[in-house]
Image 1 (cartoon, rainbow, N blue to C red):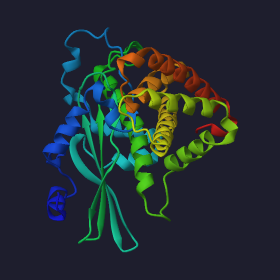
Image 2: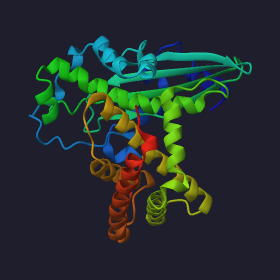
Image 3: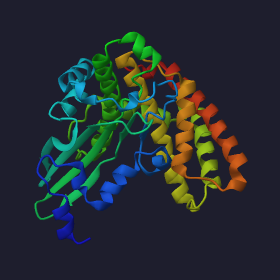
Length: 329
């Protein structure tokens, strides 16, 4: 793509419809709405639910009864950082500018789009920012997307807690959006120019990630990374160079810490608890999917390694929880 066509594709004003991305991006976005394509983006939030208990047809109810102001108020009660991220955004799939600053002669802008819709059993997805460089105008734009799927509306705990359907929809959307926006704040934090003040969420996550990579967390961290390396050995068509494997394992390990942090923060804010057994089971499978599929001849050792990753990941998460330095307030 030439610089001119790149610019023309990416220069809508402060808000622009998701589908203005163009044919490639439109296909990419819709392909992400299926569990089988989960490994194409990072990170994956809220794994698929078992919704076999949901009454037939109810997944397709009209979501227009939710009030954005109430959802934002629920998030504001828990985090000013997250509220500032979404306060000017409407949940219509359009891009809105959430921040803009100048540094080193360049203008940096961050855009976010949020869409609420049913799309299978994935509760929510947060897309890493697309970087758009406009050299002529000395502007760098980072665009990210959050999809919110309130498919857990009929979870028994939620029904017992909130009988009113409108209030339950708003609560579920707020909870999922809260979780996904933690990812977005961390993503955006990585793109900020040096010297710019970071959010408390980003700084807190960096502290936890530093601890998770320290010798203090051995042997649990080493065991998890060993499982990830083994899965890369078993994967079909996975790059075989040691440097590529090392980078992939490092990224997957950060993904697993990233999700642990986001789930803990969301549980604390909304009073719904995910056990480490459940989290480690779900995300061991998702980490394996991100690596890729394995040949049928390796299916037994592959499944065995995923199960081992589940156990090692639970031990890691338990150690994180038991460390007094990681109390998240």
